[in-house]
Image 1 (cartoon, helix red, strand yellow):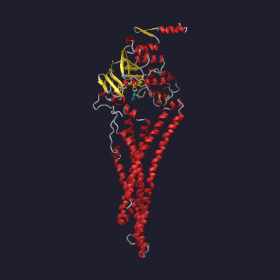
Image 2: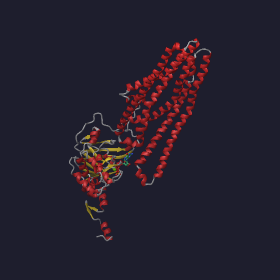
Image 3: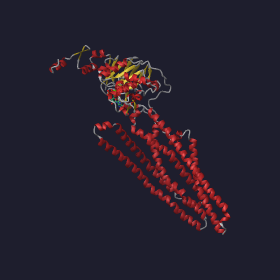
Image 4: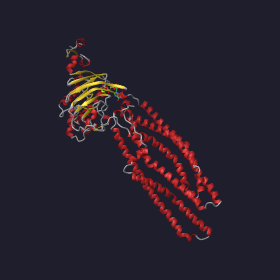
Length: 616
Ligand code: GTP
Ligand code: MG
């Protein structure tokens, strides 16, 4: 991984969740306290039942009628019913509170994550696959919410019920309580072993889900390629494999749970048996009365259920642990390219002087060298072209200007100041970039053009569409500017997409306009129209145009020819034609004519060829 990418700070999940509950912490703590309270209140029914049974028992022993103790009987019964109703009300509001806090924490984390992802640098997008990021934003985050709303609540539920009951048992009869609780240490050992086994299974399961989502996402967005190569069956098999992997990982996780589940269940089921044996014995020898036994027996579930639940809770907690690790990785990540602490604010337009000063750069921390010692100067308002064979580093070069990447050596300056010293948003607001790989949003054409400046008026949208020679085809569309273009501009031709992308770049009235192969898919006439419009823009702007066609570069103030990451030639069209180097060869190749002293002449070969074909 690129060292410049980011540092991942590991913070404990509790601290992290606590941080995201800000504003709702009091409610959450109240919910936890109320959970403890209502669990203690679970003892109400058995307690009062025990007392009522004791009343019967005493009456029976004394031979007095029950009506003698009617008031006490009614009081006990009323308290039992009344307090139970109070308990149910508390349970209701507590559940609501957990849900409320968890939803708010989820909302906050999701927004924060999205913001983090939005502000990441290119290295981040090279490293993380879309499907994986989507999994983090959806499934993983839901596991986090589930932890706040259910897992933590269940832990408090189980422990408070268990402890309250254990204390109550000890108060009633310590020896019987000890007998009943004697198996709990063994159960904890089993749960600890289960935790170890299930942690890894949940990590694998989570990764398989991410693979499945990535496969689905890539297939849906790349569906046209799949169809073009008739690879549906292949993709179906590939998806099937991911699906099988995921299903098997799920089964494996369940199998681990099922291996431990019977042991835990056996321990829980042993409790009533122990109570029956020990309790029966203690009744016979007079250690406890029937009323106490009834209380014990009515509450034995309050020991058994938390024991049963513990396995389930551990299982869910491991799911959360695997998911939260993935979420926190993004949450705590730092973008490698950010504004400096004392960054220069520059809300105004740049003059547009661009300098590359001995710039070198390589991807993957320099492992793939791409730019080698590049120096060039572009004056404000100039239109320059960059030309060179495919893969020589043209796109990489212009990506240094808006700081998509930072140079390994040297510096890029705008108006004499290193681009890394500017506030990043101010820098980027000043640059209009039409990327080589055009991406349009699922929105109207108007929405796409006004993407960088939503305050743009309809007239201005039309003006920029005219500049980029897009107006004509947009007018012909049934809904004109209101036409919805699909994801990635589906429904438009390559050249149409390029023109909308150009209009979008122009619409922010940038002080630096960068066009990366933006007219490669348009015809020569349209290209000329665009070239003329660019000369007549109603704002000052330095233009950098990456192009393969001589017809585009010819009219530029200066041309930089790149080869293998270096500037190998620079000058005007005329100068480079005179030079007789790479550019001059390109001119000959593209025109089919020969250069003599920098002037194009009919080549002898061409004339002969044409003559041979009877064309004179
Ligand atoms: P064309 O657009 O085809 O004309 O090429 P270009 O001159 O714009 O080349 P570009 O700057 O895109 O790429 C230069 C070199 O860097 C090529 O060898 C690419 O394989 C490599 N490269 C480009 N982008 C990346 C990237 O994101 N990661 C890595 N590792 N290499 C990259
Ligand atoms: Mg390129």
